[in-house]
Image (cartoon, rainbow, N blue to C red; front, side):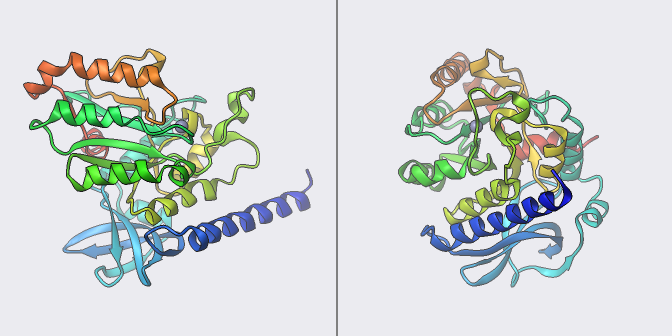
Length: 335
Ligand SMILES: [Zn+2]
């Protein structure tokens, strides 16, 4: 391919990306009106705390930032009217400004654990934890949500741990076709029965049954990474969900180039050391992976069995569910 073609391809990918973001923000009639969603890096002060700004948008007509607390890794939507001393900085300058915070330590560690074609990023939490961090992937699917995962969790942890923390890796396509399931999850959050860390799992989540890993999932030639990342965040916001700083690669498949690209958006790839359906066992501090999209019966059954086997430990508070942000913060707060 000559240089002219490369430039034309990049330009058309950029135009397509802009068009898709415009299309989603204009024609998807969800509850929230979010416009002009884009990357913005800088620092803001809120109630004496310094927050890192990652995105800006116009939300219900108001300039708003998506901000992360680099100490706790928790995110929030910050209306410009509330933020004090907003200072725009480039990405490198923010890294220097917030160096040695758990957020940037985790980001840097994730970038160094990216050589294999599968399972890049943070794959486990704090080993001294008495319990696990549960991640549930919602890849595109025609089947309904496996609600039993959530009802079982709530039943087991009743009076022990409420709300029960879970991380859900969500795709744009799943959101488009599962309004009732999404509303049901939001109701559980509103009732404080569960607490959800919303993780970006890309918009389209393309995959091929025949392509080798190096050209499959997000490594498929022609993938518009900008849309896959920002388009999903925008869809989350339009459905009233708060994007976290976490990202899960479809199929857990990546290479160093795509990992570096994802990191440049300020989001941290989360792998897993216990994909239950693949026979991997959960250990203390494990980041457990199951699919809740109706396509992984084995994983869901294994998880229900695991829960039942830990019933006595749960009652004695010796086996807990950990919040993904807290888990990563613990792992990277003392290095
Ligand atoms: Zn997936």
